[in-house]
Image 1 (tube, one colour):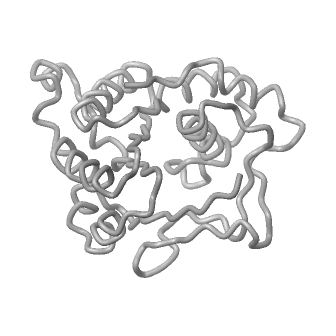
Image 2 (image 1 turned 45 degrees about the vertical axis):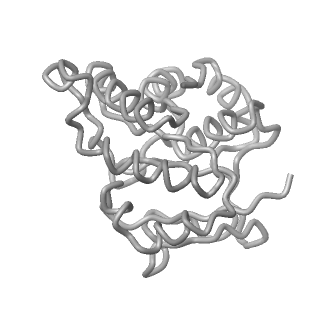
Image 3 (image 1 turned 90 degrees about the vertical axis):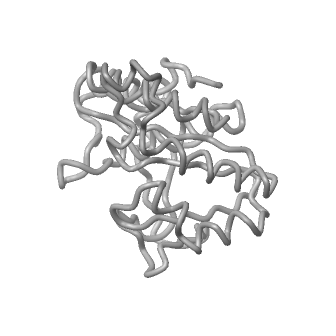
Length: 211
C-alpha cells in the first residue's frame, strides 16, 4: 500500500520539547495524518519502585505526551506510544512500567520494545542491535521498531525485509528536524539481510501489547 511518512525529531529533545515545538504543533493541528507515533527520550519514562507507588503519576513525560496525543486525535489520527529500552531485565521492567502508565493515561496504543529486544538479542546475538556509538539503535533494533509498529498499526506482519530509502540517519537530518520519507530515494539500505528470515520471524514471538 502507498504510504507517506514524516519524521519530526531533534537531537536530545524530549516529548516536553516536542509539545512546545511550533513545527510539531503546526503539523498536528493541520491534521492529514492517519497515525501518529510518539516516542519519549530514552530513559525519561523510567519508573522505579518509588515512582510506581504513585502509578507513575509524577513522570515528567506524562503531561506532554497527553497534550501531544490530544492534538493528534483532534487532527483525526490514531496515537501510538513507541517504547525505548534499558540494559537489563530489571531496568527494562521499570521503564516499561512507566511507558505503559504514560500510554494508558494518553489513551495511546503501546508498542513494547525493551524486553522483546533484550530477549531477541539473547537469541540472535549476531545481529546489529546497537549502533557503533554504543547507545543508539543499530540496524536490527531499527528494523524491530519498524516491524512492531507496522504490526500494531495494520495487524499484519510485513512480507518483506525492512529497507531504508536514501541516507540512513542517526540524527535529525534537517535544521527544522523534519524528514519526509521518500521511498524512491537511493541508495536503498536493507536493515537485515534477506537470508535472516528466521530472525525476522522470531521478532514476532513476543506479542505487541494493545491498550
